[in-house]
Amino acid sequence: MATQLITKLPAILDPTKIPQHVAAIMDGNGRWAKKQGLPRIAGHQQGAQTVKSLLRCCKDWGIANFTVFAFSTENWGRPAVEVNFLMQLFTGLLASELVQMHAEGVRIRFLGDRSQVPIFLQTMMDKAIITTASNQAVTFNIAINYGSRSEIVNACRSIAQKVQANQLEPYQIDESLFTQYLDTCGLPDPDLLIRTSGEQRLSNFLLWQLAYTELYITNTYWPDFSNDEFMQAIAVYQQRDRRFGKV
Ligand code: FPP
Image (cartoon, rainbow, N blue to C red; front, side, top):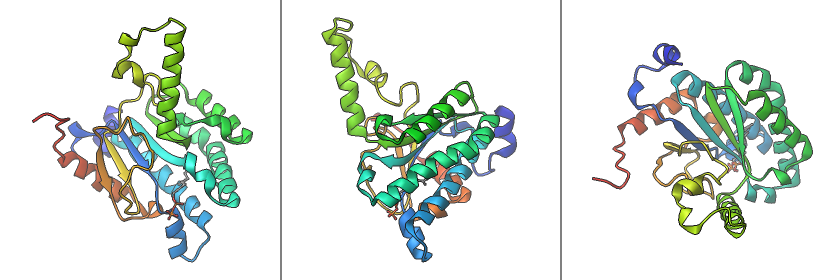
């Protein structure tokens, strides 16, 4: 990893300030497609290419964790044809890219409630998790049927059950313990959140984990978000003065 960092890191980036975790709200696929006169699903297809490209950058630049919001708990409200397409797209991509990602040392994890996603996708998710479990180059977290409030409520419920079963005392509940009950257990909080297409909101994404995250919001639609703009986003992040509430 260290050698790759030196050889592949763009010259404008400071190797001592590489974010350990970048998260992305991939917005604007539909508008990108409309602009090209294409159906919305073409935007998602093109957006998937952006994901692949940025994941490779993460690996090459030493960004250890990359998390993408692929499907929210609210996205079930989209037309059935689009929802079905997305489920097939996730499954197809995992199937077609798994060998390559595994070879490149990508560890795949999922955030969100998998119980509601189609069985064919759950099967592929399990295969991806098991195949890549011991990889170490970069961890790729895909949020599918994810909603942050629901994640937090589930964590509270699990903790309450432990207290009720006398396995935990209320005084033992602190921030560090709480994070162990979130879907992101074991991951550092994101250093940088990228949101494309100009929307300036969190949309129920990683509300706990983003407490001190730097935000990079761009008008670019996700399918147009290039490696160059990713590099710019990291460069902007490296200029930020992160005080974490201190002076
Ligand atoms: C938001 O754009 C995008 C989505 C809800 C789907 C994102 C999925 C991908 C990019 C495929 C990635 C694949 C993997 C395996 C991670 P939108 O449809 O809300 O765009 P709009 O606001 O312009 O309508």
